[in-house]
Structure formats: structure tokens, C-alpha cells
Length: 404
Ligand code: MLT
Image (cartoon, rainbow, N blue to C red; front, side, top):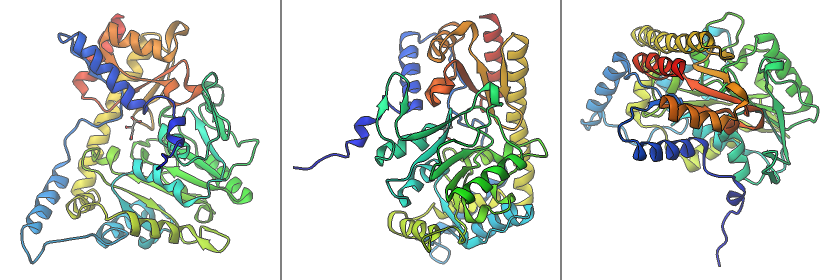
């Protein structure tokens, strides 16, 4: 008789954003007259930029003609896109990353979930707490996290690195040595970030400890301050210890279009084996590539027009972030984030738990946010709002929150 992967049974509840969606649907079914404003999941609301739409149309026309039609994409992604990434995201920033160290995919969520497959199940992971739930949940599915304590909401074999107001939401080097370290900066969910010198400490630590850093830079486009690194490869020594994940979702509105990439430098090895070769093997076996038309759309992100238009789009969302942050502060909330990231992280009022505040906000203001505790135990008592709504909805949500 077949057996299931019973690691799945260890997962508590459903995926955070699915739980929220279910709660909101139930509320709407009971209150069809209420206009709910969604500032929960970090999903974009602005249409794709004109340069991207133009590239999509052009690529669709190519697919209609036998002379320019494209079938399966090359394993690592089309060269035109990998070259554009290598130049714009790396060479122009002084980072040494070759086009054949870039693996194009259909998004950073899948890559951040799948990357653990190339590591032994014995490896110990370290995560920031709070953390993007995909990193932990996918390691649970793989059987790497030990047992779950529902009281403390922690896994026995995971190293948690608390990110709280006391450390400005920046993790400290763990006492116990991990094998795999997940870092995400600018951070989801706290919106915090670290300086280049702080990131250099992590790179040095990983090289000393023989650990690998999985660096999620999905929110890099939102960096507004000078001393904040856009890529981990800005740090010396990162080529021997870091994998970087990037997404086109947040900088270019591809949440529904799907495109991302993973960088694995060929210098990153374990016992003489390159991680690059393992991921290439996985990619070749399990994946047939992001669609040609989407990769052409991705290329347009790096065109001069694309860059201009996306700068304006990021500014639009960051204006929302400022609106939320200033509005909440004026209403007496303790707030952080929103300067180098599209997320605002607030302390819940009156010692409410994160989920209590979720219900309170939904019922009193008809606004949806994300409970901090859904990202990990140190997120309890916090709440996340996203700047990815429309400006009109953002302003309306703030008005309602101020009246609560
Ligand atoms: C979030 O809200 O944390 C993100 O949108 C989730 C994601 O990018 O998958």
C-alpha cells in the first residue's frame, strides 16, 4: 500500500495567505454590503508598464509565425534575458556574476521553496523570526525541521533568529552554527533592512562556518537609502557562500505573469561538487522554463523605457508606504518599515494579539492586513500592511483606521 509523505501532516494549519483569504471570504459572505480593502498579501495592483506590454505583444506575434515561433526554452533561460540580468543587476553594480550563473524561473516563491532540495536532509536551517513562511514550510515538507511545539510555535530543529524592535529587526549571528541560513533583505515581513557592513558580517560568518546563505532579494527595487546593499554579491566572499533569489513580481508587477531567477556562483562548492551543477540538474529534470513571451517581457524591464516606467511604479507604491506610515504614526501607532520596502510593520495596540487585531481591523475598518504571528513567534503582537494597494484604497483604509 502506498504511503504519503507524512511530513505534510506536521504542518500546522494552512498556508498563511490561504488562511487569510478564507477568513476574508467568510466575512464578505456574511457582510456583502461592506467594501473590504485588501492590504494583506503583497500582491501588486498597478498594470504592467507600457514597455512590458509592448514586448509581450511583440513576442505573442512571434509565436504566431513559424519562422519566429519558440518551443521549449533553454534550460537556464534565454540568453537575451540572462545577459540583461547579468549586466543590469550585477555588472553595473560591480558584482561579478556571469550570465551562465543565472537560472531563469517562474518566480522566487517556487525557487525559495525548491532550493532546499539540493541539500541533505540533515542540514540545519536558520531563519529570521518573523520569516516568510515558505522557507520553513518547505523544509518541514522535506523532513528537515524536527517536531513542532504548538505552544511555542517553534520547530525543534530550526534555529530561530529573533528580529524584534530591540535589535531593529536585524538578526544577530546565531549561537548554534547552522548549515543553511535564510536571509531576506529588504525584509518581508518587517520592511527592515541591513547595511552593507552588516551583510558583510553574515558573508564572513557563513564562509567561516561552512554555511550557505540563501539570500532573498525580492524587494531590492524598493531600496531608497545609500548604504543598503542591492545584492549579496556586493559583499566580498559572497561567491563562495551565497545563493541569491530575485523576483520580477514586486519591481515590475509580474505577480500574475510569473518570472524570477536564482543565482548560483560556480565558486559555491561542497566536497568538490558545485551547487550550480546540482541546481542545473534539477532545473533540467523538473522544469521546462518560463514562457518565451514572459522572458521577452522580462527583458523589457531592463530597457531604458522600462526602467523609467518601473521607477515611477515603485515610487507610486512607496508613496502609499509613506501614506500608511505617516497616517499610522499620526494615529498613535508604533510603526517601522516602509522606507526601503513596501511593507509597514506595526505594533498592535492595547496588547492585542496579531490575530485579534486582524479580526478587529476587518470588522471595524473592513481592512485586511497580515497578522505578524503568522510569520513566526516573534511576530506576535505585530501586524503587516502592504503598500501594494491603489493609492485611493490606501488613503481610504487609513481614514477608516484613524476612525476606529
Ligand atoms: C507576501 O505577501 O508576503 C508575498 O506577496 C508573498 C509572496 O511573494 O509569495
